[in-house]
Amino acid sequence: MPKYTLHYFDGRGRGEGIRLLFKIAGKEFEDKRYTFSDWPEYKPKTPFGQLPVLTVDDVVIAQTHAIGRYLAREFNLYGSNSLEAAIVDQVVENNSDLITPSIPWLFGEKDEATKAELKASYFETIGVQLNHLGKFLGDKDYFLGDKISYADVVFFTGLEFIILKGEGTPEMLKALEEVPNLKKLYDRVASYPAVAEWIKVRPQNSF
Image (cartoon, rainbow, N blue to C red):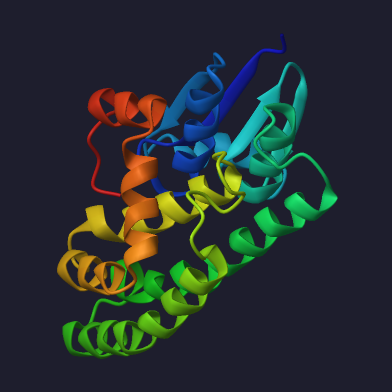
């Protein structure tokens, strides 16, 4: 088996979905975490000046979803054919629409009044997007039916990121509860044995 090393900050963020793929697949990997003070020294060694980065033996892979898709294929978590892979891809792409607009009010904006406006605007529109995703899921247990995949991991870690950050916890929980099949999926992934075990023991971080 190749030697896998995940390079990411000491937090969940964009690295958590990758960690969950390893845990679900039962594969060993080195979880190399960087503090923000460590980062300037390592940054020039990365392909694009960003984390996460995955090394597979001596091969370096950058970009979150390039890593995720690679591992999902390797671990049979990307569907059994091209059409199922396309379903996974749709959920992965949709996740950017769900999560990226939260970044300014979660991390970037310092002015409290502006932050409040950005947050209110986000939660005015998130319900519509979650309803679209709920219709896409339908009555299935997972996005691919009865088997967990990278799509479910990306959905779960995206929403968990906001829920655990604290500032948007009640609003996101309320929005999720208003789409019952997505709430069931979120809980189903959280209670998936390998995921639940990791949640118990993983480092507790603010992001």
